[in-house]
Image (cartoon, rainbow, N blue to C red; front, side):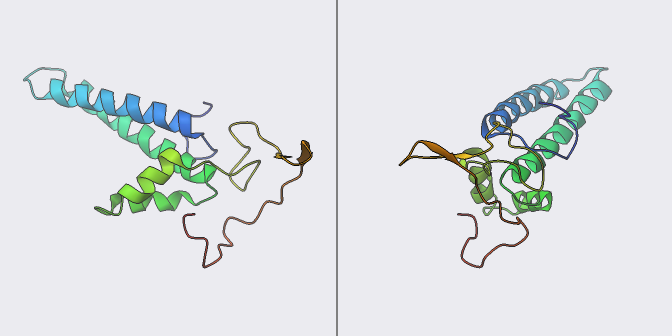
Length: 137
């Protein structure tokens, strides 16, 4: 988890899920504690802003792992539709090997040919060149 507060790079599903859970737990605790009158409101607001920034950074990195632009994180702001990309971020496996956004966070550089048990070089497609039938699949 290098450069966790930056937008560049990629993270795996497990890292994304772990950060997602931690950020949500911290946000719930901060929200609960900020309901009470206390002098630490500035501290709570700062922690909450850091959580939001961390969530944005990790979401963009997860989109990068899928070979997609970080701008697609804006789809998470669309009510009801946001469920679909949210599930994709949590469950879809990222691109195997390096892509435009960086190296594979799992360290995969090739695919294993199951028929011969030999590693086979994978052809990386340009992530910006999306075919009309591919969509989110």
